[in-house]
Image 1: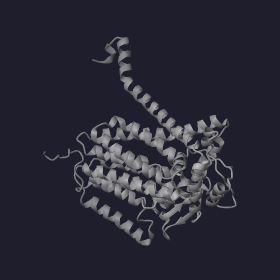
Image 2: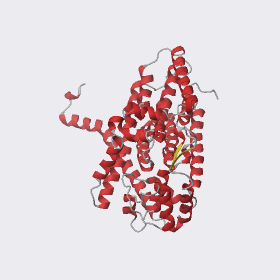
Image 3: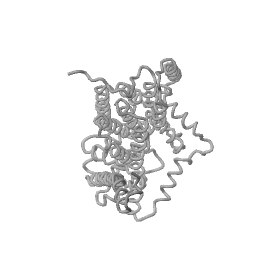
Image 4: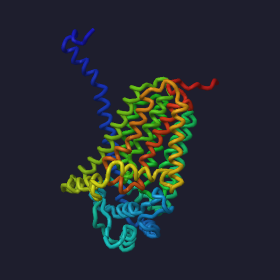
Length: 450
């Protein structure tokens, strides 16, 4: 019977019942965002209250070690992917060291550090710590949540210790993710993850704090999302991806932020396709929902930081913010000299194996030809357009990022290229899904008899 046959009062109640789940979900997201953002802010404020004397010795040691190299240097000649960024690490330590416990909220909003234009940032950090020079430059557009980690860590170790701890964490977290994928026979997901990490030059990531944060987030979010999908608890995925966006914005220095969306999302879709309930509509809705959740968390944290900074500092910070946004999208280098293709080409040129001299380019071309041959000769029957389309859309996210942050992606290709790890995983999963080497994704896995 049509709803129009019911009395108006009944129809109103029915409409309320239809809307109730959406209202409840919306409130849940708002509460999660507010709680997560509050925790992030409290952590920053508490870190600022750590006495500077507790980290002085290790911070001085870190400053000395950073001065052993230039702010940018290549570990291997003619390999742009091997470029290590100590410029950002020095600024991060400089900000962390200058947090002021006497007015912690204002201090973390300003994120000030000592700057002098007659020498590089490594030397500035050393002078600031050794000579007790006060902060004189603000860096308030980011949360700089990683500065809280740096300040706390320097109570017991220096930056070399942080590099070692970061490397160990990368190995353990990614090892745990691969173990779960293999345990549940998600072999293509495991192999694709290895390829994605290799393409991103994961062996260089622990050598710079700037690079590491997103690659610590990826295995954690991926592991949880895969477990939730396997258990059928997909309702919690939206909250998980929102938290991922929040934490990414909080910790990251605008490096390869999209990997915290693309890699966990690809593994989630792939895991869904191994179950009996897989379907194009369900997959598409899941992708849309999780992208919106991650985007709301990521963009919401930007907006919250700017609003909080304006309120705490009592000044209009938007001209400052807008100026830096313009610089990263179209400023610096004349935008008419940079095309989207140029930005993409520079980032692709750093990807393993393409960025590893002439032999690497040859190997990369050989891999592309081999993949094309396999897809043509060994393609399976009954391929749905969605088998390719959904992976393609997710894999294209870094390209959209390069198009929007055109100047930033062009100049800083030596670390922004790592966003293509998500594209690499998407390509691998596509090849696995459309060839006879991949199991029919809609057929339930056969379980061993016990």
